[in-house]
Image 1: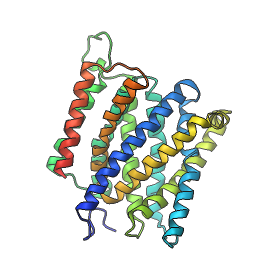
Image 2 (image 1 turned 120 degrees about the horizontal axis):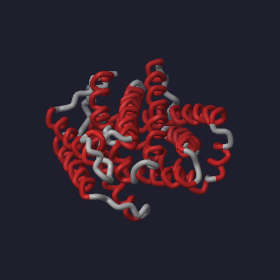
Image 3 (image 1 turned 180 degrees about the horizontal axis):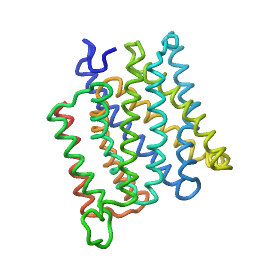
Image 4 (image 1 turned 30 degrees about the vertical axis):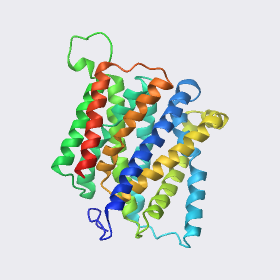
Amino acid sequence: MNPTALPEHYERTEMDAWIALSVAAAAFQTLRFMLQKQLSTATLSAGGATFSRFFYSTPIILSLTTGYLFWQNASLPSLSLAFFLYAFAGGLTQILATWCVVALFQQRNFAVGITLKKTEVLQTALVGFIVLGDPVSLTGFLAILTGFLGVLFLSRKNGPATGRLLGSYLNRGTALGLLSGVFFAVSAVGYRGATLEIQSDDALLRSSVTLSLVTLGQTAGMALWLIRREAGEITRVIAARKTALWIGLSGMAGSLCWFTAFTLHNAAYVFAVGQVEVIFSIAASALFFHEKITRLEFIGIAFITLSVVALVFAV
């Protein structure tokens, strides 16, 4: 299947659908990161908080996918080698990206941490073009670039001047944010590539089957890692189930929205609209974590908001 070609029945309603799905995914992802921030700073390690997202998602998405296949009277579609390669790349880099974000929360406040992660948009555009040939228009690129300028404002570390211009930007928090963006970019393109390998016109079937297999693999892989490297952490994840269960539920809902949007449109555009997550994170930062947002951070947020609005009208 040609990933850049749109089916003939790709009408305005479907274009509206990928935008709505991107916004919904951003909302669910904000909730999930809020819960992971709470657990990673009080109960679990960064690895444990990351694992909880996959561990509690697995039974939910497997049940939903099985139920959907039964309801549609459909069988599991045939899966190619390319599907598994794309899915493996997406699953592994999503684990690394999530780990970076959870670790980042211990360096910067919640809203800034989420925004630094949003460097994934520019990087997804580049990776998507190289791997899948997904094009980005000039208008779309300018909108994405505007959002990146907002990220630069938000990446400046608060505190006394260091005497060096780059010194205020080159810090552990910024590095983790940028690295998470790299991993999320590869992950998004991997997932889009995997869903496009499934021969079906049903976007929800393609996304749910892909998400089920990826999440199952992520859970198994992280469990083996934690058993070897962080003895007792899985027990703590189970003990924290009252909160961790909601991490799994919100993570599954967000991923299903992302995956379905990826089947309908260019991953870079999906992530660009998903930058509304920054607005959601501001509310969470102020209302739940009582963190102060600085003037520079508000300027950066304004740039990102402008970027999202411009992109919606450009597509």
